[in-house]
Length: 578
Image (cartoon, rainbow, N blue to C red; front, top):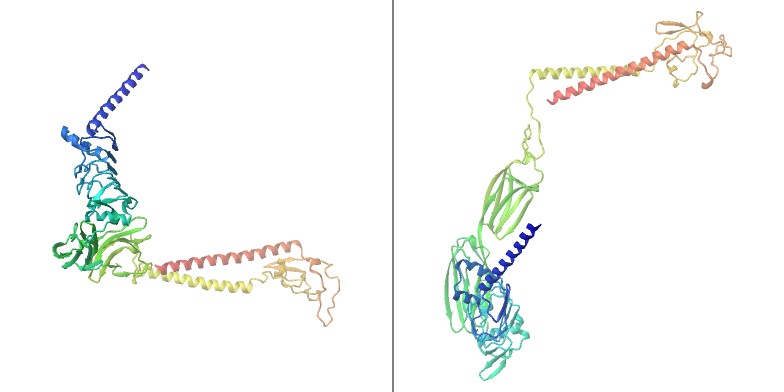
């Protein structure tokens, strides 16, 4: 514990020591004047001082180390606000005074002896939003100081300007309500008198007017030469020029001044380049009152060119990426295997100036989509084509049909050999034999399926005379024999080749039968529910056995025949397909 406490105390002492050194180092670098208070983001001076303001000048006089120049620039960049009051030696604001304060947003120089500001004093301070120059002996002020700034407020209270064309721009800003000047009461001195600035009347002092020889757009062909003119007029005579920074085409300028108030300049483009398509040509006319500009969009037309066409790439959907350039924007057509694609095509494109970037998309492509894909881009100046091979899936082991349509495929067909022909003949013969056998079986079943297989003789009577009885005895001969029709021999039942003696039920016939009557013997009426067979149990068992044996034997034969036919037909179909 003691050792840990010792190291902890030593650590904090080191931190405090380094912090003190760093604070002294910052103080020496900033060289904050004695009458000011400085922080990493602000310099505030509200006391009288006869010395120079800017710390950079003090560092240069004392001689700063060369390796600390980067650190100094970073420290000045962090300053966002400067406030100065009552500095009598600050008479001129020079270009170099403010160039390191690149992050400055608010500047106040109030009640000092500031008499002039150089034209590029704020050129390195693009973030300035608030400027206060109140109560300074300024006699004139140029609008060019603020042309690159987005001022939200410009304070000029207590400044007495000289009435003239040099402050006409302030009057125009007041009228338009720019930079908060409309809420301020400003004055100018006209000789010995003092006049409100918004009442100042200066003749022949206005913003320049501008006109160009073409409308808002200029269309040329690639490689052509073209000349465009810009005329600026006004009092004082304006300076006129074309801004051509970034222009790729060769260009020349020809300036002419037509007194009393016109300045004209011609811009000639030689061998217009496609890289200048959509370039904005801007003509600027400016004088002491202000600046006026107008722009023309240059359109350079050229035939299309395919810059990129790559192989399919798997994304959310499969994509053939392409980049096409041309103006006017070309029309795109896709060909697959030299066939124009229109119905199933899906192209996604984005337009950027004269570029077309996009994808030919496929959703779940298959081997059918394999092949060459040709992109054709065309406009009225020409056309361009480019081909890429698209491989999506391996082809299956069969060839496409002759028609080549999507999704239509036929198996490979080989000529039959002698062995194949013999197999086909056997299959056809078996199929024919099976069909004939099936017809014969159906004929036999329909003809003999419901007949009794037993030959029954002797004095037999049936319980019921209905043919369609639900009892299995419906196969027994249902003829009704009276005792007069019986043989004189012993009563018997013949089943197959076996003769079985039968015992007659003496109670079966309750009424006598007249055999000698010419009329037909009639069976007495008995209810189905009250009749009893007159055969013994042995006969019934034999009957049931032979009946069900015959039934299942026929069913089994039919089933086997059906299976044979089905197997034969299936084999025949397979061989025919091969």
